[in-house]
Image 1 (tube, rainbow, N blue to C red):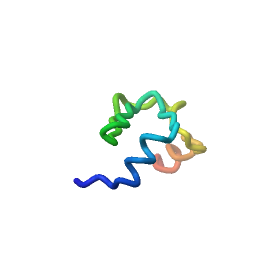
Image 2 (cartoon, rainbow, N blue to C red):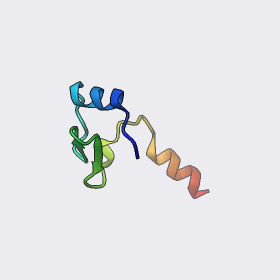
Image 3 (cartoon, rainbow, N blue to C red):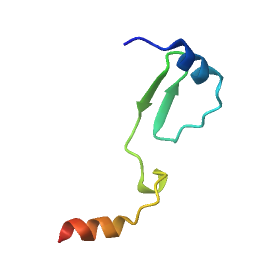
Length: 57
């Protein structure tokens, strides 16, 4: 696909810190998932056991 020059500029100049399971390629504006994230690495405030209990019904 086509790259947006505005997005490419932001990607190259912003100091974004990616989680350890993502690899950033700023020059080519790409993000690659390098491995499955650990539960503790997912920035989400969810009670996992409540979700499991809900679907276990």
